[in-house]
Image: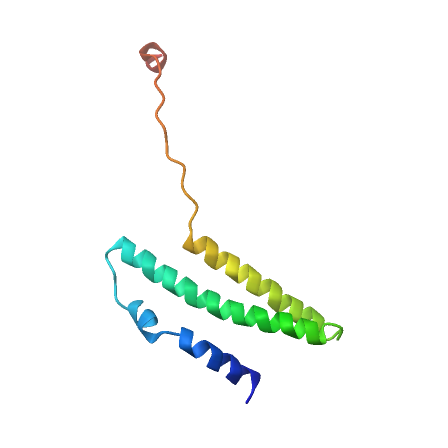
Amino acid sequence: MSSLENIYLKMSPTLEPATLANLHHETPNPDAQKQVGREVAHELNNIFTIVRGYAERMLIKHGENPALRPELLLIAENVKRAESLVRHSTYPRSRPTATATAQPVAQVAA
């Protein structure tokens, strides 16, 4: 059995067809849309964790190989970047709210 088959077998319980099928239905409720987004982010993070773990394991086993090391470091760095992008898209930054300040009428009319 190849490494890719092993990865698929480990991931297959986390790939829920119902979650992905929910994406095809429009959900007018914003809370439902957020929930679907969180579920998709969770599934992506499961995949990223597996890829990152294999890359780190390969670095430990073959990190001294000059042909493999740059490629493995690139995989590990890109997975971390992807995890960060998913985290930031799932938890958007709060937007500052505008505040009104009172000004004297004479100053506004001038």
